Length: 426
Image 1 (cartoon, rainbow, N blue to C red):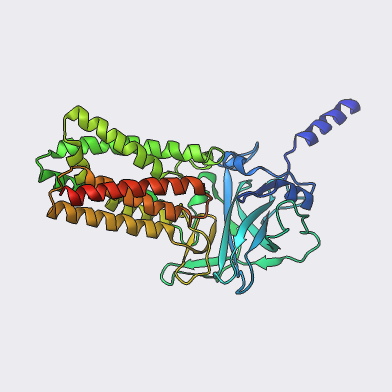
Image 2 (tube, rainbow, N blue to C red):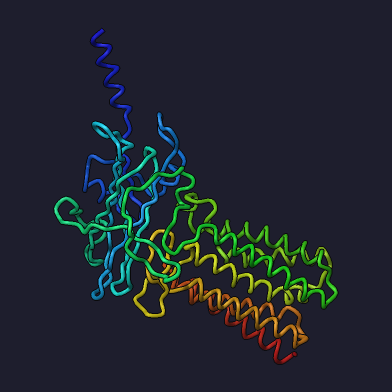
C-alpha cells in the first residue's frame, strides 16, 4: 500500500503545470529568458494567442491581465534596445503560491530613440487566477551593437530600473504618471485586449471603415446618377467589390504574416490586397451587367479614396500600420498596440493622400469630360501606389526595398500614361 501511495504522489507532482512565464516581443530570444531563470519555461510568442480564453484544469474562469508601464528614454545618445520584465503575484494567496498565482513575462522594444519622449509598453498575461494582482516591471537598457538576443542575460546581476504605471490624456495628447499605481484586476480573457491602452481606441478601425464606406457609397451614387447609372446597379457592384476585396485584403495579410496572423483574427488587413482584388471584381461585374467600365471606375474614384482617407484614421487610433519611432518634432505620439512612442504618422499621411486624390478626382469629374474613360481612376490609383511605397519605407515593420522600388517605377510609368491620356486626348 505504501508503495502504491508513493507512485500516486509522484504522478501528481509530474502533472503539475509549470509557472506562467512568457515572452512577447518582436524577435525576442527565448534562450535569454531561460538563462535568466532556468527553472521557468518560456512560451513562444506564436503560441501566446492560443492561450487566450483557455483555462487550466480547476480554473474558475479564463482570466487575463493587461499591464502598461512607461519609461523615459533619455534625451541624448544612440538608439538602444529595452528589455522589460513584468512580475506579478496574486493578492490574497496563502501559503506557497501556485503556478497560476505568479507570473514573469518579458517584453522587448528593439529600437528606443532617445529624445522621442516617454515610451509605454503594454503586455497581456493569460492563464492566471482571477482576482487582484500586484505587478512590478523592471527595465534593462542594452546597446544595439553587441547587445543582441544572443548576448548573456544579466537580470540577476545588474540593478534594473523600476517602472511605474502611466495614464493617457486625450485632451493633452500626452502620457503622464498614473495617480493610482495600485493593484490590477483580471478580466475575462477574450476581453483583455479591450482594456484601456495609451493612444488606442479599441474598435475604432471598424467604426471608421464603416463610416468611410457609407460616405463613399453616397458620393458614388450621386456621381453615377449624373450618368444615368441606377443606384441599385452601383450598390450591387460596390457590394461585391467590398466583400471580395476585404477577403483579398485578409488573404494578402496572411500571406505576409504566416506565423503571427492567428494571434488576432479581427486584426490584420492589407490595403494592397484590396486594391488588387477590388478592381478585378469590379471589371468582371461590370462586364456581366454591361455597364461601361471606364465610366463606372472614374465615378467611383472619389468614393474609393475618400473612404480610404476616413478608414486610415481608424488605423491610427487602433494602432495598426504604425510608423517608426522618431525624435523629430513632426512625429506624433501613437501606439502600435504594444509600444507607445513618438512615431512617424504614416497612417495620417496616407489618410491625407487619399483625401487629396479623392478631392482632385471629384473636381476633374465635375469640370472635365475625359476623352478616355478610366484615365482618372488609373491616374488616382497610380498616385496612391507611388506615395504608398514611400510611406511603407517609414513604417515600423520591415518591407522589401527592391519590391517597393519596382512598384514605384511601375506606378510612375502608369501615372505618366494616364496624365497623357487626360491632357493630350482631353
